[in-house]
Image 1 (cartoon, one colour):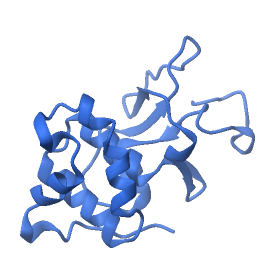
Image 2 (cartoon, rainbow, N blue to C red; image 1 turned 180 degrees about the vertical axis):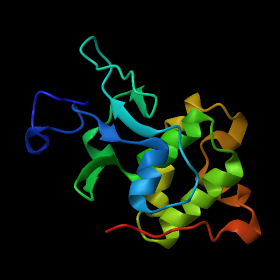
Image 3 (cartoon, rainbow, N blue to C red; image 1 turned 30 degrees about the vertical axis):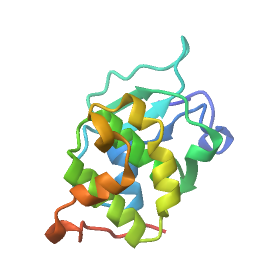
Image 4 (spheres, rainbow, N blue to C red; image 1 turned 180 degrees about the horizontal axis):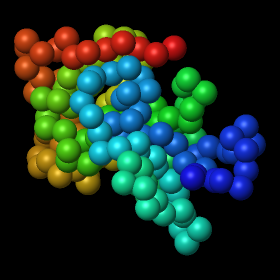
Length: 156
């Protein structure tokens, strides 16, 4: 699908695509919200594959070398990039984003500096307006006090 001509062990990330968005949350064992399907981010360009399968969602975007990692033998966006993608997508409200951020912090998958740095780009392009758009502090505050125990079962 993402580079069908090459065996998986010969593929290079991020050029062949990386697991992203809500699917990345599932790889990390964070949350229990279903996504649109299995989501991948691939570099934009004329050679970019298209999916005709309803369960596969392909996003266009550059993924920098420090924005992906390997987890469970999959190329996946880092927690900071995942939070940024979810913020930009507009599919999660601020309280949900806050619960995701709290879960990443609680499970030590990311620290506040990493998450805040990942959100810096989002502040300029997010569907949310004003200070809330890219402020980790605002996103963390938006999480309901009672719901900070967002399901988190980190996969190693």
